Image (cartoon, helix red, strand yellow):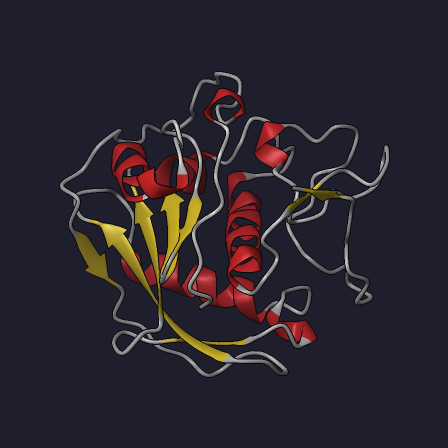
Amino acid sequence: MEDRAPLPLDPSSARPSPTTSPKSVPQSGPGTFTTAQASGEIVGTGGPLRRYQVQVEEGVDLSAKQAALDVQKILADPRSWAAHGKGRFQLVSSGADVVIKIATPKTTDRLCAVNGDTGGELNCEVTGGVIVNLKRWVTGSPQYDGPPAEYRHLIINHEIGHMIGYHEHMACPGPGKPAPVMQQQIKGLNGCKSNAWPYTADGTFVSGPSVP
């Protein structure tokens, strides 16, 4: 992972519109984590190898192993970064280069504080890993018109995109077009269609204008 300062966030625009959650998510937890006892083969066609582990905050109703398998499936998808030479990834239970933590909103805010105010709503990339807000993992986003399980694909692909070098965000390329995975879709689609993958099924990179 590149050793760089995390991307700053604008707290005034970080919070999506209020929504009624179909499933209760605890706002805080102990700040300690369970590491998924899971491992897998290397996925990816080229680029540096990143060994990653998945951790889930203790006391929440989410299996660390299942979350790890979900992340593994996302990174192995043919529409993913790994499938197009942007890096290789391997799920491990120890000896990781990257740690993906799924945390309650308040713990996420604390771990992401160096990155700005995540407002109990956002995820972030930090040096050495990714912090996933449990609320987003479980309930998705009110701006995303797909199911929560699909929104998880966007979370992982967006934050891994930052990790592999896509430091700037992208904007919607035009009405009716798929939103780039590096667009902050939680802040609004701006005419684009929800999209959780960096590449289309035919291998086309979904891009848009750079947003500094």
